[in-house]
Image (cartoon, rainbow, N blue to C red; front, side, top):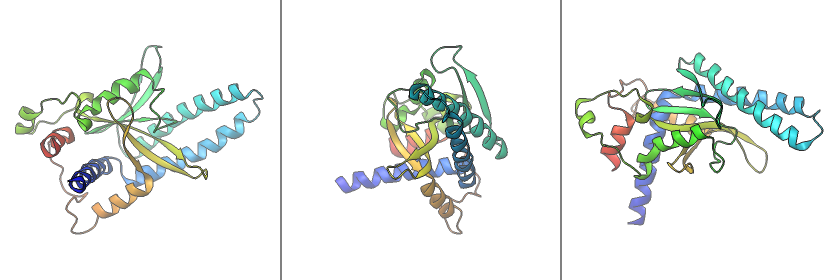
Length: 227
């Protein structure tokens, strides 16, 4: 029983990643990682002249955040992905940028796997992922029957993207999918994204990238297949 449950969880995770890779390819992820790492080095060099460690950390964080959003916008433009600048009207979170595709809302984060100190907009968008853990499941039955295409944010999943460093200070781009409470549900590193992209692009793959996508959105498929 335990193995069946584990296999089912792996199947769900792969299914989610396959859809993410359809809309944010390996080339997109590679370019974004390279852009972010290049800017990271310049920011640290610039802020090294600030003597007070607290001010230095705050300046580094702010510059990294706004540069990260700007670079996400730049790479989105290269790959034709819509990007929007939105605002909380001065409340916690300020201005933020979102990449929006058929099934996903993606935001840049300095700490993509950290959920304890989220901004207001991240808390709101994390609630879009309620279906992942069966919290507040919405009724998509009627829309799924007629194949409706959704364009509203609430019909998408929320994902954060950024650079993750390990104890050896090695860096990798990571896509984090928080649950409705903001804690990580799925985490996808660049190496896995490239691997899945290559598998999906091979002749004979059951999930080919050049196939026409179904008109039913991922949230509807998720409910049909996994709930």
